[in-house]
Each structure stands twice: as C-alpha cells, then as structure tokens.
Amino acid sequence: MKNEVLRFDNVTFCYDTERPEHTAVRDLSFSLYEGEFTCILGHNGSGKSTVAKLCNALLLPTSGTVTAYGLDTAVEANENEIRRNVGMVFQNPDNQLVATIVEDDVAFGPENLGLPREEIAARVDEALRLVGMTEFRKHEPHRLSGGQKQRVAIAGALAMQTRCLVLDEPTAMLDPQGRQEVMEALFKLKRELGITVVLVTHFMSEAVAADRVLVMNDGKLCMDGTPREVFAHSEELSAIGLAVPKPLEIARTLRQNGIPIDDVLTADELAQAFYNAFT
Image (cartoon, rainbow, N blue to C red; front, side, top):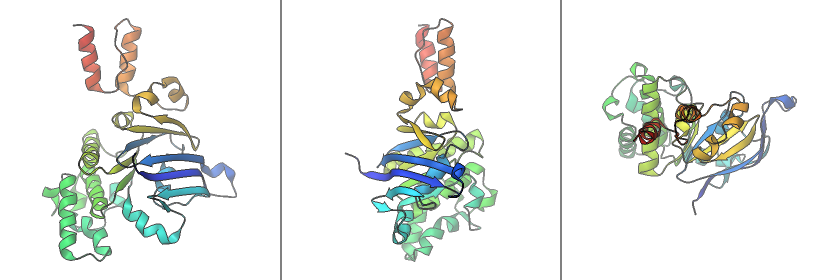
C-alpha cells in the first residue's frame, strides 16, 4: 500500500470569516499518495488554487485538518519541515526567480539551509539535469523563455530535496512549447525519482496523462477518479463549466456521424482509432 502524502480532513477555508460568501473550500476530505501524479481541475473560483496553498501551510484551514507527511500544517513548529517536503511552484515564473544567474537561483534554498558548499553544488547539478536546464546554468533568468523559467523554478524546489511538488497552474502563462517542456519535466521527475506531483490546471490535455483527477466545484470535491473515469462524465463537467479533452470530443462527434470510434483521450489514441475504423 502506498504511503499517504497529503490528507485533507473536513477542511473548510474562508478568506474572510465574517463573510461566509468568501468561503473558498467547503468540508473537503481526500488523501493523496506517494508517487501519484494528480491533477486538480475546476473553473475559476472553484477553490483549486486554495487547495494548492493549503498543501504546504501557505494557507491554514479555517476548520478541519491538513496533514503533510503526517505533520499538521496548523502547527507552527512543523512549517519548515512541511515546506522542505512539499515544494510549491506558481503560475508566474518571474515571481519565483530571485537571483541574476540560473545556478544561483537554484542554489538559493539550499544556501538558506546552511548546507556545505559541496552539497549545494551537487544538488544544483542534479536539479538542473533533471529538468533539462544544465546548459543554461550561467544564463540570466530574465532572458529565458517562460517554459525555461518554470523549469528553473521546479529545479529550485528539487534542490531542497522536496518529496512532493504542488504546482498552481504553472503553464497558464506559457505557449504550447513551454507547456510541453514543463509537462515533460514533471513526468520525468515522477518516473525517475518517484516524486509525488499535484498539478492544478485548466488544460484538459494536461490531465489526461495523470494517474488521478480531482474536480472542484464551488469549493467542494465533485469528482475523483482516473482520467477516463472522470472524462466519461462529459455532461456533468459541462454543467460546471469544464470541457472534455478535444480528442474525446472529436471521437464522439465522429461516432455520432456513423464512424465507429471508441472514446479516446489523446491525439495519438484518436489517430489510431481512426486508422482502425477504416482498416
């Protein structure tokens, strides 16, 4: 059985306790497990970004309990340990880069831990390798593309030897190439290191390759399952402002027009299904 990484027990969070309409998360309960790649979907205002910030004590529950690796996020003495284990990457990479050279930026966290110089150098080398940014180590971050900046931000979390990465819409401001670069880096981390990944996104194409999909609506968890299980509920998703992946939409349109194609989630699956239908 996989080890539990994050646990939400009856969690409610309100940005203004005197105004209940500002409640962002309502009585939320779920667990995430070691090595899982989980996507959290939801329309704007659904509570998904609040969930991300609750994962490593950037926000504390108004009621209920969040635990990260068994540590209660509401206990102040746990904060540093939680944030070493659960790293955060945000939407705008420019807000996360603090140094004028890439390798110095990645080294920032380990330096603040007071680690020996040799260990810091080794951590920086490995983190940059894992995200494919070694050749850019001497570059100025502001001259990088959006996707490269996000990979540097991810490397900064890896240099802290984080065991879980929580990413709050990290590809929202990127072009398709940048989104692909970031997603490839995340799946590489899961594959090579077994890092637990929690990805908040509004891109359906990013969710189809996840192990698990959580769907938020009005601060509540309304769906939880594999991508195929979740996207099978297209009408329910549409009702809360979410679409299904484009290949699935195309497959269903083709089927309605007499072409015998099963539901698919990716462009490759669609191409194969189309080929199979005519051979």
